[in-house]
Image (cartoon, helix red, strand yellow):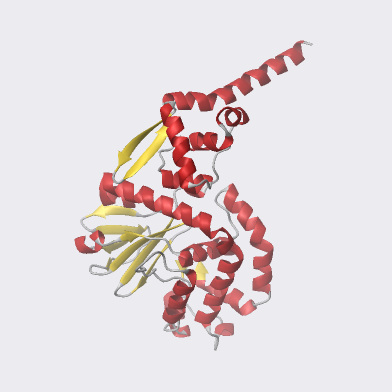
Length: 339
């Protein structure tokens, strides 16, 4: 297995951070693999597949670089760098892409071959490989990610809130376990990053970042000796589609409030609910107050966050329309058979 040796100071200074570039790289990987993890991702993939294929067909050298640089268990450094923490706010995509271009320019064709541990196709000789990779990522951002970035960003922030809350409750072992397959905290300063047979890497004194993305993929990257990042998919409850609201429940509570109640089968914060529903923070807060007063939901503090979840009464209300529908359908079928 591959693992990193992390000092207490490095761990204490680590952060969960968003990265528009990491989100774009993850989107590129989904397009390249042409596989979706859930219906929402499948709809996104179906929307952009034709334009993606046309982009690669018009640029066969970039298509070859993509096939060479993104393998099932390996991604070339041309496509990934650890994010840089911004002094204020999140780094924009343009800033991150410029950093990727600058770092990529240090990676020659021989360097990429050494990363891959295999000869590169002759068609890539003399090509500006970092430029081709950056141009492709810019296309993916402009055409497929930027239009939905506000919602993606809310989901990413919601995941960060949840991970930070778990860190306060369960420590690093709880926060880092199962970030993605093969990742877990081993104790004694050891962070397992995958299940592959790689030698340990000493990263004490470096900046360590954990980067959530909404597509269902992840990787590790570094810029030695200063920065390391572990990119992981957001939790399923955030990245997937929200469960449907029963019509009867929507009529009783109002569609927006009913949506909040349906989602609270899993403990969520107001930030997470805002991300999942697309409603404003004030609207979500008002719905929660009504549901709390009706004793359909309850709240508890977890670290610095307040998490809401349904009460047994709320569960009963959610289940009632489904049960009623089943009884009505069953009665109707029985009458038909008896006639």
